Image (cartoon, rainbow, N blue to C red; front, top):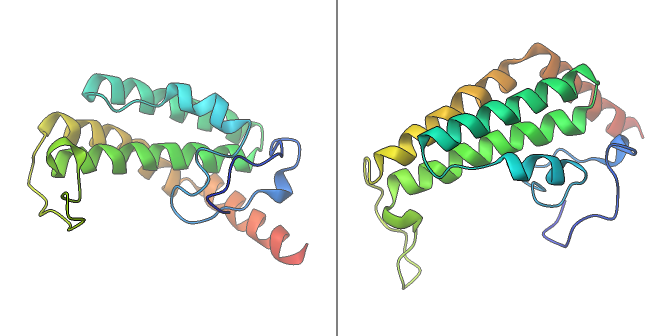
Length: 149
């Protein structure tokens, strides 16, 4: 996956073309999942993050029930992204990791406790997905199919 514009592919219709990528790669480009998950995603405060993480996890469960690995993986990415973005704000005032000169700022513990709580809301569900045997099997199966394709 690249940083180019959205793919002109419906990955639900063509799941074999989905690449897992690293971390949160592709989170804003892979349709129809971006359109389904992005509106649910918020880390403004702990309550919003809790509601968001719950809604995204419920969507993950629906994708799992439908045997839709790209959807499962995209839900995992949105949970991971909720955690990492909220943690950036928790550690760096205003969420700014770098100063005006491009130098990395020293993280604080905790610059924003509300964002830390928001991050933890996402982390709980992100961990559940990563530990889900169905997710692990589907991920391995998807990788195997792509290797032999």
